[in-house]
Image (cartoon, rainbow, N blue to C red; front, side, top):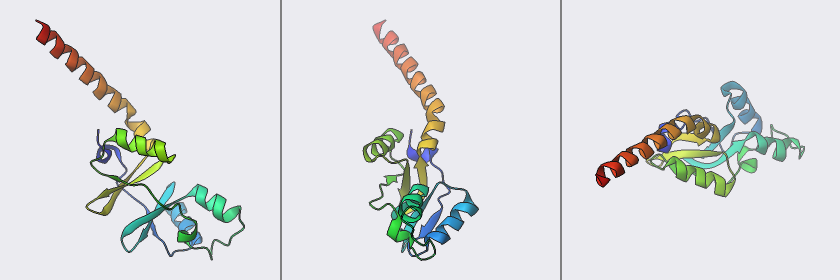
Amino acid sequence: MLVSEIMSKEVVTVENDKTVFDACKIYRDRGVGSLVVMKEGFVIGILTERDIIERVIVDHRDPKETKVEEIMSKNVQTVHASTSVEKAVEIMRDHKIKKLPVILNNNIFGIITITDIANALPAFSRLLAEEIENSKQVEKQNSQ
């Protein structure tokens, strides 16, 4: 199963030079759990609610003065649309993250989250069961 098959295609972005207050309005209006941070058309980070809580609210910073780029999670991991879901899970596990922007032709194409993966598990389990059954039938045919 490929990332492109289960990812969310609607990616909500914010420009790096916007304020945290602007980002919070986007969160409210769009009802998302993270914003992909862009600079000149390229993904440069990801902004999560946790970033806002830990780096603005708890640190008593002014959200109308603080820029998104100052508090975003940097060194964002991305995956290509044709990456396997298994590889995406491995990246998430290794980097202890829950969201991965998906890239296609050097552009943001989607985002895959732990929730997307959890929702896909029943379908993935069915595919796996079918593969096991098919391989059993092939083995049975080859032994005759």
